[in-house]
Amino acid sequence: MRHGEAENIKAGLSDSERQLTATGISNIEKMFHIFNKSISQFDFLLSSPLIRAVQTTQQVKILSQSIPEILIENVLKSGEDIREIIPLLNALKGRNIFICGHEPEISRFCSLLISKNYSSLLFKPGAFAKISFEGKVREAAGTLQFLFNPMLLK
Image 1: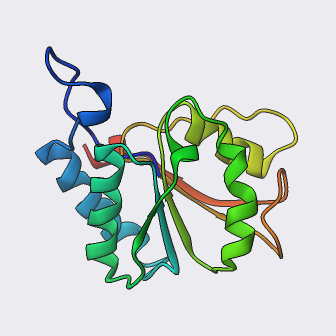
Image 2: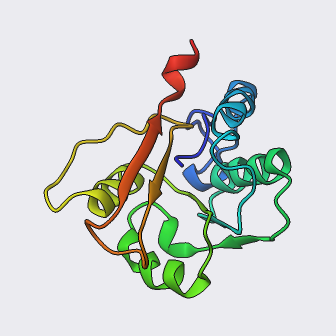
């Protein structure tokens, strides 16, 4: 999932300090009710350390009534090589693992998981995808179950 809608960048506020807006929180709640039918709880919750991603993951944790603590992963920050998370995903051995990151990394990562060729996926703030695997998480071995864009809520 890409984090929910966040505050605009403004003087005195660094990018890493941007928080979710009321609309961002509301959209997460609305979308959760849609994907709750597909995934009711998560075995693991992984988040970028940036505030807006942590807040998004906290909302999903509350709404899904998931028990595990949120794991903060620096590799999910903007500008990092998100592919480095694959060994961790396999080590966790969870069936339903939630990941919250940023653009353009999250769309590129999802593309990499489902295709040998680059696919152009659009992840607006709050967009989420479900990708399944038979066995281990590997590049180009996933099946895109769905991709939901919050623009559909308008």
